[in-house]
Length: 371
Image (tube, rainbow, N blue to C red; front, side):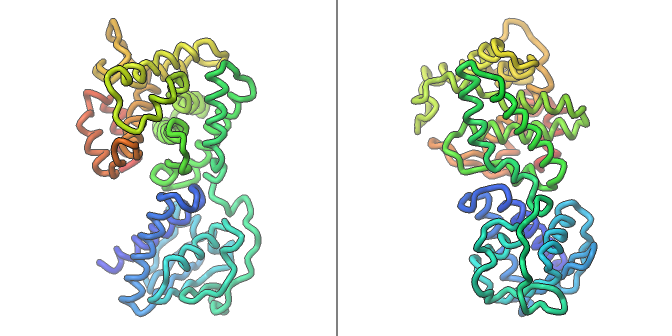
């Protein structure tokens, strides 16, 4: 039934929008896109029906009389957020604006002190017996906030960590890296749509930092899906987080060049796995895995790539997981010399490398996460 599919999509977009604003800055496209999509679908359905009603009743979410069980973690958490706000019913008018919808989403998440201020024109919400009045809003508790909020400042922490390690310092700095990995693991356990919505944590100027966080998220998710031990996932996550540390040892003018690199510049960039691995080898990390992944993450499954190996070697599983995440994130990221690619185009490119560039088993595991 088309109406049922449409309303299921609205509910799904609602979940994703709420989770997105809990992860990214307000101006980030990863917030703007789901909000705009949610606004288009809600407004179209409200116009078709002459107004759209959404109710939250225990374990059910009802949209225009169609009940949906809150059986997935995402739907259940949305219902829990609504219950925490005292919201049992939402009535949305045909003229709903993007700005008013955005205010409401921020109100639900508890982010932004001004979200509840001002009149509501085309959204009426509250308890069933008193939906005409907006409920009194309690300050958000830790339970109400989305788990990935732990990562809100992760980019700045990682930036300092990479610089500290590149200068040869460890100690407390390294512990910050382990804390980031622990936060990623916690978020992945608690957020159903984390993979698609968590990457691009911030609109950060430092590509290496944001990219390293994205890759860490995807590698930890892969390792978790393989049901590895928590200790192993911690170690793999730290290796993924530090996989590009060699770029801290490459001249900034090459890293930040707005156009394509020439052959000489690329040859310097291609040294970053060797530079990074050599540097990590000197640091007391308590594990060799970051050094191994750093060295191997640009070596392809069939032995091509860089650095060149004298003899064929079996790559570490953590390197194979990092490699596919590394390429996917690079394709999905805007660079000064090319636009970012959409998800389907990126996955199509990756599929061409299955069995040559990427290990088939690890590739299929990754694909199951992001498809």
